[in-house]
Length: 358
Ligand code: HEM
Ligand code: HEM
Image 1 (cartoon, rainbow, N blue to C red):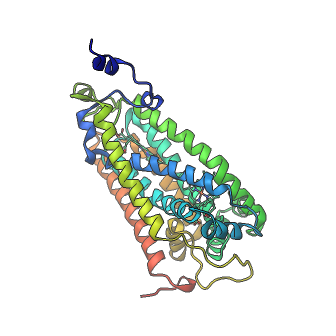
Image 2 (tube, rainbow, N blue to C red):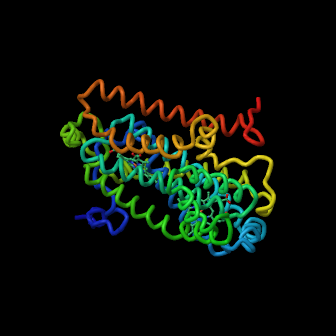
Image 3 (tube, rainbow, N blue to C red):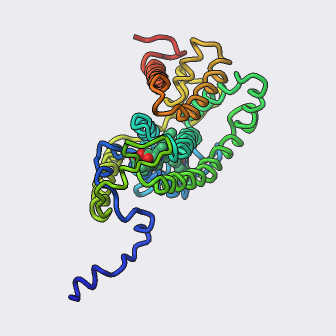
């Protein structure tokens, strides 16, 4: 055996390779199968963990010091502004990317059989991303953060029975104050990243257990017999080169946003001075908008329960149930469009006091 052949025959000593498949079906390499969205989301979560840990070295979670510490990060610390901007834009972009990933999974019907549990884990991941963004929103402790969190948490009060008590628990008192900041910071930098990491690992493991991505032509048991007979290619280089290219594009886009657009930082939070416009964070503004039109109990209890039940149980509709499948698609599209419309109306067409502006 020549020296070159000997070297290439050696087992690869790279721990990351153990987490990846050795070979992949050629059909799974098509960009338009996934649009790279799941991988982009995973990379962005890692960016959040790394930048978050760095920010936490200088951030001080008390009302007296929080705002100043964010100013210090932004204006004084070397690369502080870059990391803060990166953390801000990546957090918000994650909501969009994860929602698009969910849409692609839905439209490729990759949620039945062995993939059902992964759909549920995905719903858990989506909730965590929303909560991580929401808990992070308060941390800069400026007027925007203080009042947006005040408005968004006050929606809980409409929950019949437990509403007021739940609001007290979330805020750690009747108003947003030092205890709220402590609770939000602890959740944001402790429990949430931990759960996010664990769920992500479980999510990836379930994909491996399901035999890789869903390539169509599968029965309700979720095993696509045809896929195993497809041509398989070594993951290295075919899959990895694509993943590296996609990661480079995602990182370049995030860096571009972080270099050219600053994360907002308003005036120091002032509980005694309500700003002219108080809006919930954009991902909850659809709920705020809906509250203007519909009975609050319907908005905070009936509709969320119906939506969650729908998302949890629609994968039970069998693929050969044509009418059921059509109805599920209609409801899913209707839900997505309504939420998008309400968000746009709340963001763009509502001025101070939430009255119409044209
Ligand atoms: C932090 C959030 C998430 C991350 C990092 C993530 C990551 C991934 C990755 C890397 C894949 C494989 C490649 C791809 O499909 O693009 C995948 C597949 C999958 N994801 Fe996610 N995902 C997340 C959220 C979600 C959500 C919100 C759902 C749905 C509610 C979901 C459901 C699924 C399912 C069912 C699959 C398997 C698809 C198949 O077999 O073809 N994921 N995810
Ligand atoms: C997916 C996970 C995460 C998301 C979506 C997220 C999101 C956010 C958001 C939207 C903000 C507000 C930024 C701003 O407008 O200024 C924020 C702030 C912050 N986050 Fe995170 N974060 C995540 C993980 C983490 C982790 C793991 C840590 C630390 C261990 C962390 C530490 C911080 C700190 C210290 C701040 C305050 C600094 C600032 O506002 O610039 N984050 N986060």
